[in-house]
Length: 159
Image (tube, rainbow, N blue to C red; front, side, top):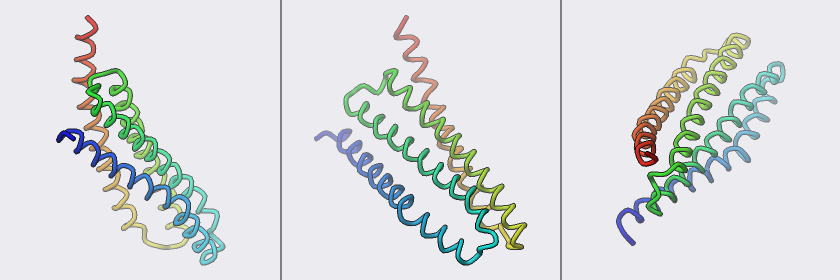
């Protein structure tokens, strides 16, 4: 096993573990939190719907990005990193990052509305969400930076 294949295998295992954690979050943790919160605050239980839509949308989008990352690592293992397939994977990952940013913003808005209705302070979750937007923006930027030279290489190769 070469160094490159060992590295990609390690990254694939990490991606698989993250995917399992996201699946467990969607199946076990999110419904349990929603049920508990609905029991504690029955008058504002309808505010859980935007939160759950954002949370499940985030999980689905993250799963798609993880799958594309897994495919990209497979292309790299097969010495097919400079191909149209890699370019498509990078593009899908970038679109997923922008979707996550949109969902986080939607979550912030619904959180602020909920905080206004209940009188709670939403500064902590809002600041954590903004940090998530920053991290996701960095990922989208990295995907864009990787995509441009690859596209230029493929354009020169076709000529």
